[in-house]
Amino acid sequence: MSEQDPAEEYAAALADTLRGPARAKARMVEEVRDGFADTVTAHTHAGLPYEHAVRRAVHEFGTADEVAPACQRELTIAQTRRTARAAALTVPFLAGCWLLIRTSGLDHGWPLRLLAVHVAGVAVTAGLLAAATLVTTGPVARRLPPPSRLPLTVAWTGTTAAVAMALAALALVTASALAGEWPLMVLSGGFAAASHAVVAAASRACRECARLPA
Amino acid sequence: MRADAVRGHLDGLLLAVLEPGPLHGYAIIAAVQHRSGGALELRTGTIYPTLQRMERLGLLRSSWDAVGERRRRRYELTDAGRRALADERTAWQEFTAAIGSVLNPAT
Image (cartoon, rainbow over all chains, first blue to last red; front, side, top):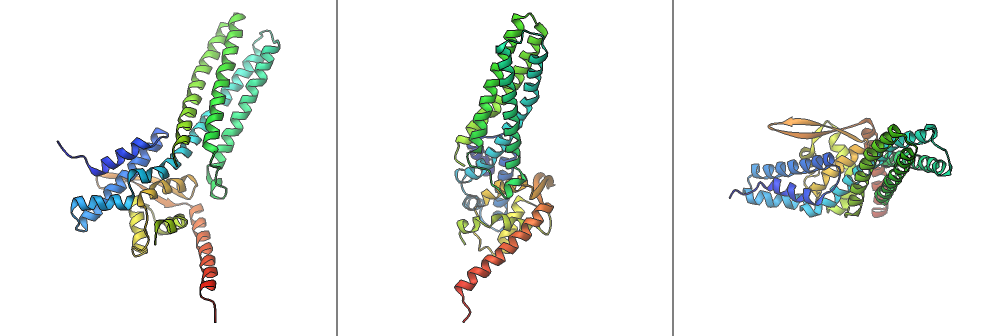
């Protein structure tokens, strides 16, 4: 049985503990793995036996468990920004829903008027949250570090937006079906499924990241 | 010097070793250790997330670079990074002057 490359083993142990956007996580793990491999190579070139060089590299790097919190902190921010961007993408969807409600020609009784207000409220909240998150975790964070609870706040706000979006679309679909507006119903259903899936998945991943030690 | 003591100055150290030109991760670590004569005890695995954080903050930019058969992420200072380094140097000089004047008062 061939022995696994220590750099690959180290990277695998690190990857097992980390959560976050796939591309960001892959980049993080790849950079750490390459750095670890370079460290081992430097020590062997300096004359240390291979086994000793590996032990020395682990000592200098820290174990995967010791390094993981610092990596997770950055991945959690990356996931928070991703969730905020997903929430921002729902704004056009929600604006579309709001327009459909306004222009559908359906009976604009109080349930639909209430729905329109609700949808507009969620759209404004999602847009503001996304903008605030992207600003506070970008270059502005050099002078004003983001609050530690931001990832969890974004995660739960995204979850709420996803649920609200699904309910709004369901109500719109029901109203369209009752009025025999099939094109509107199909459009609303498509919008709802796509947007809900994107925002709900990003929010779930953000909740996972926010729960990990960082 | 222990890793805990270095942590608060890590951004400044990384900016300083990148000032002459772009380097990849391991070369950055080696440059810090070389300049300090090995006196700074760094938990080097945490350098990589630190570099990515500094890139997110706009202090560094990075690109993939072929090194032999493998590729490496190469980091370089941005204009904001150069300004931040100047600020770090000023803050450090003020700090050491203040501490020095307490530890070694003029007689």
